[in-house]
Image 1 (cartoon, one colour):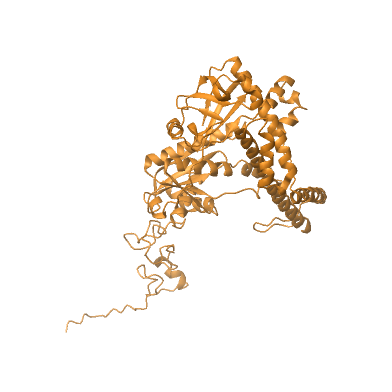
Image 2 (cartoon, rainbow, N blue to C red):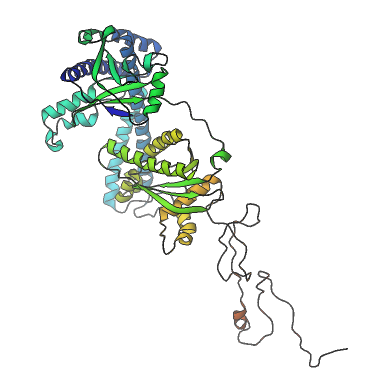
Length: 523
């Protein structure tokens, strides 16, 4: 959670800039040293780096800096592995398509050949380029070498295109220094108010433990600087206050927004591992099926028997603009979804286990730019991470189900029966029903029902729910192949007294022959 530091004096801002710049330079040097160590890093080298930083900062600042460097290197390492997988998948796809004849049609989940000789030649050149990039990435991976830019590679490249970014050199320099500043400290359980380096009291007083070379700026005992402003966290402030009063660990980060010229403080802590809820308890009051799309979440509530209840819900979001705006849109949509779930008394939400990491490359989908743009816009990772943490906070379980054919089967089985004059059901709404039923263990298709009142199939196939123990509940009742009005066609124009297939016994021909006596025998 975040709050603005309002009412800072010029002296406060100057001290924050000096401390952030000093610690940022130490963090840059330590990150470079961590990258040089590569995969040979260990506890001894970590301790040596901390001993080098302690005289020019403090023991706790040195621990925060070295830990941040280790986490940054590990993040870059994971990104490097993901890049290797993407390059490998692209190379395999190009090799397969280049081996196919020109114009060859693709099979299911297998792409075909290229359309023209010109496209084939261009893709062969791209194959060589990807192979070269893959070889360089493999060499970096084996050597443990990563490439990290403190402050961001995009912002560093913007320095050479200030006109296109509509920035002056002074504005870019302010953003660069703010991005490379280091004012963050991990919490410590058992210490006063949960953090000794950046401390915030329950009353909102913010104080910072200054590095040793900057002790002259202290305005409080023990080398601390107390800011003149107060902090009051509006979001989850009660939970934060409980942790602070109990001296439980809380991590803080101070950062400067140069666009608005404002200072903010961010507080965070780690929740204990989520305990797995029993399946029966999570689904005791039904489930809400959610179908994730590029611009909205389609949700429908299902009861314990898999029947849709009420009307579908739609939670829109716009994934455009800055990353902070996109994240805020996702959080707002999930907040409305969870508020609706808790209001209905549902304790479980079913979502699709989607992952388009290997499906959105142009090697696989070729000219289908619109489809690639569509699946690239799916916030799968962001939705998964946000929904898990936010649902845990309100006590709602999250069930991930297989996403295979949910949209297709949901539209086929549920869209038309639920559409009425006053309610229009979309394909995505029907897919949310399929997701919810799959989470409950029910099949997507609707189950068979008892026959109508006249015990025939004149009104169509069975569509209502049946009990789990009923034999043949998954089958559709097919109409009889013979009808009474088609008897003359079987006889090829000749008259017959033999009746057609019975309406009561399915596909059972009648073998009785009607006999009419001339006189009634009354003896």
